[in-house]
Amino acid sequence: MSRDPEENDEREQADATDYPGDRKAVSTPTVEHQWTDTVSPCTSIIEAVAAATDRQPTDLPTLDARIDGDALDTLLLRGSPSLTISFEYAGTVVLARGDGTVRVTVTDCTPASSND
Image 1 (cartoon, helix red, strand yellow):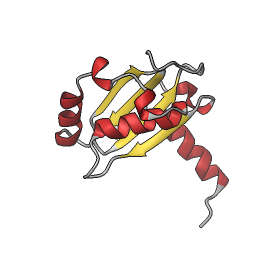
Image 2 (cartoon, helix red, strand yellow):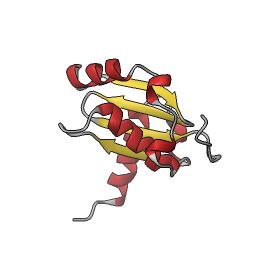
Image 3 (cartoon, helix red, strand yellow):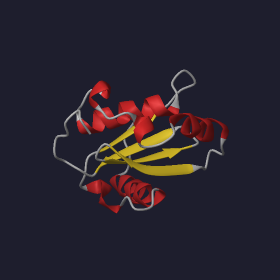
Image 4 (cartoon, helix red, strand yellow):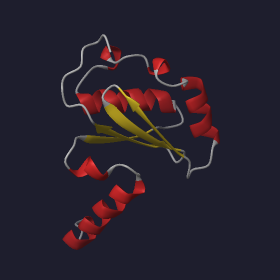
């Protein structure tokens, strides 16, 4: 199934406006993840950040050092599908939504050490 190129351009523009402050996403690496009923939002965020930064999840700093993971999971799992939470983590900007979408945009393109 192919899409009209103009439709794709409109979709990309709409996606860029979906996430405030994400105007540079077109020129920086971005990864999207969707969590399922068996994966917590925090686990999905860690996997998405690892994929976006080309690192292993175990090489990333602990997420709990940056944000309360239990509270984040609760907010995203029990909150409104339109809820959006944004924070910086491991050289990225993470945008997580209550609808299950996680978007990670790399802001620091230098390889990070596991000591972050």
